[in-house]
Image 1: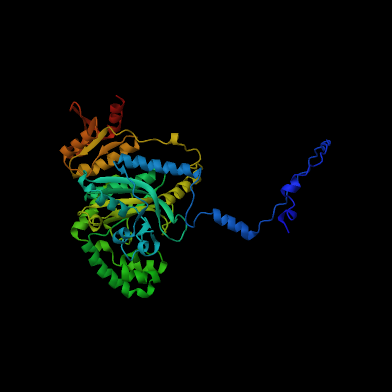
Image 2 (image 1 turned 90 degrees about the horizontal axis):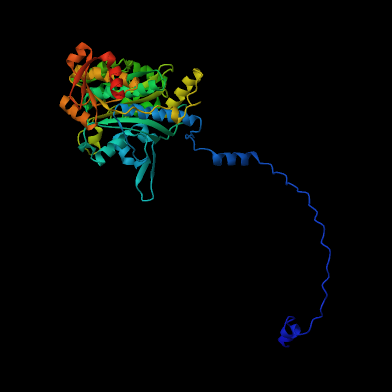
Length: 488
């Protein structure tokens, strides 16, 4: 059988002539709009609703900062920048991600931060990294890594940024949180500790918060070791009264027992030996000097023998700030810090004294909001960038000569700042010549000079840096004299 007989559309078939059909015109059909029907919405099940909600929810322990709350945060940030600049701190940033070993070496094993709270993991190259749980170790690492010891000492730095700890979320405590951080590296004088406390205290006061400083001394490593022998022996006799966590701390880090808020542990701690009784004479003298500065500044403080801060790198001064209107709890401290003279060397640098503090921004924000609500003047209600004052231009330098003058000058600097006058200074320097050289470096037009005679007379010398002319001014009239200079 040939293929031509089987295929219908072959050439033979297509070659036959086809009859022509006349085109027939038909009237168009009238357009009728069909009624639109909206399909009924399918009911969303409760489980599906939860699924959608979970997909859009923040990770547990994290939070959004939205308007108008964000305006309040901006105010806190600007206030921090103003006071840090007034006290001659300079802005820094370190990475959020660091080597895990940095915090194991600095904070120490046996601490809750290292053992329980760090977000540590391996990257794709197998390296052990973590989200930073605090800033001090990162600052110390940067100081060593970038050779900041070659700069004029002390190096004073400040920052605000996020940190991360895997902790149980509760009031004022988040897994991602923010801190205002100030560090002074390269100077061992007690005035540095007092200056940092003054910055922290006055920052909170500028935000409208009334606080009290709780302070203690851990002394030197030798002081601490002698104390630990006594403390451990005492706690072993009371082991049955301690919570399970403190029984473990007793083996790894006995000082952490002093910081426990458990009621049964607190009862035992109240009877424990106090570290101040085990300080060497130089450590006692250092601590007393810090307290004398605070007395001169009029900063309220409470000696707190069980305050240890819980991190291995602290030596000598440790402190925390608590809001006066709130009962003290584990979560009520607004910030704290202390001296860490061994940390730089511990990380591979030269032996370098250092001190610093960190303030918890979430807790401060909650406190500010609570105070503002009580006064019916919410902080975030109408605050804009234009409303926030910027720091004054520092054209005046404040120099001192002698220990009495150094104690007095710190108070005068704060009084001037409260009056809107920012002055450059360096409390770590004792030589007047060096301080005047710094004044020239800052292009100061005038330098205030306070010596022992001026302290006794209640006066201050004001030197015109260009002409060298000096005038004597009553300390109570210093602000007016500076205002006159700035307006001329």
